[in-house]
Length: 502
Ligand code: UDX
Ligand code: UDX
Image 1 (tube, protein in one colour):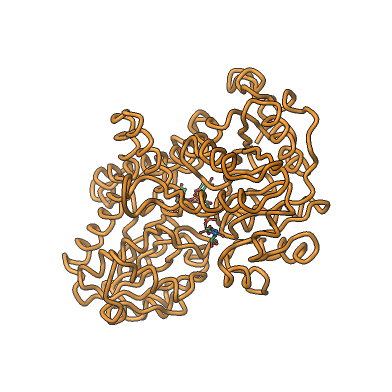
Image 2 (cartoon, protein in one colour; image 1 turned 90 degrees about the vertical axis):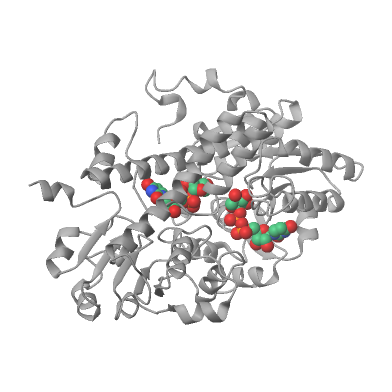
């Protein structure tokens, strides 16, 4: 992306006029960071801080976590998360200036700057249940910092949090910190997407730093800006007030998810009319004001962020007595749920109105390709529906661990009886095995290896029950080619209506 200031005039007002705190104005005397601690060795903390260590050989980075097994995995040859390029980055710097540890206290004590990258799941009980973010982990990490730190620290909120969380963190630190230890709080939301995390971290569109507009706040922001300055062009590091920064993260995710729900809503119209959603999305994406990205119709968005952050925004809007705003954003999540129900209904009606006893080969269990992460994956919801219809389900995913699949499907509220679950569900080690004897193949994740240029669909066809159906929930297949083999192909956002008019 072009540096913010060099964008064509009219597209964006220059940063100096939009930002309350252009970087030049915060470039005041400040501390150089030499030791960083990151609390939380998850999908965000792990890759982000590994890349910082890789790009800043003069900074020692220690990533800590309460979970010993996770730290052991980070220290082994089998990293706990799959992310293209991550292995190379970690292996290049681990043991040099990158360390993984459960010794949280030492890492906090030694650090100049601490990233808080713990998880912030949606609350499962109490006030705001089902919507608000559970900030219990952020609070306990903050209290821990206050308890242990004996010198000044810059504390950076990396986790996605509701607006004004930084203020709560500051209150906890100020009222519990040791005399002589000063804390400056920054918000520095992470925009990486899983599957492309390393690429996103190496070349971010922008780095956002929120701080208080005080001399100390601006100096802390400058210290963090210096860290990123080791590889990110200065003009792409933007600084603003804390609350703008916190809200920008929620806003970015909400807007991205909103595009997917919008194209998915249009996919329903396409199916009913004979329009093709891929053509529609291509046509509208050519409008430079709209742009082509995030317009791929699908079986529904998943991942740990979109739903959680939108629900968070819904809760925030309701707390601020803005019911219409809350309703607007709630609909983005509702549309996503509706897409999964609609896709299932389409499968049932195509398979002659019953799934009872039929075998469905579910290809893909991760929430998107190139990750082993299954959080909020559409596949989980679809399989729940298939089970309710008494189908037999065979699942194949190239990266998701078998134990994770059982865990997700047996999750309370999804399925409680594991024995019954195992009678209905099998996990296979290849797409071919999953499809053997199946009545339908259902593509849930857009893994490249499921494309018709990679998988031998003739071989698959030969082993399936006839008529053999394919339901493409990701629009990755060449429908005509597969129909020539003999498949009945049903795609999101496409119908046979147009042909029937000819
Ligand atoms: C991140 C963000 O932090 C979250 O706010 C965002 O919305 C999604 O991405 P993520 O890295 O994906 O979360 O979470 P996860 O992979 O669960 O990692 C969090 C880690 O923090 C876990 O390994 C957990 O063990 C650790 N943790 C949690 C601590 O070390 N201390 C705690 O007090 C709580
Ligand atoms: C998202 C944001 O992109 C990232 O900036 C933020 O830091 C975390 O949340 P992530 O959830 O890892 O990242 O992946 P993303 O690529 O955004 O995909 C989210 C979901 O939307 C996936 O299920 C994906 O398959 C789906 N999607 C994406 C579509 O259905 N259609 C699209 O056009 C794009």
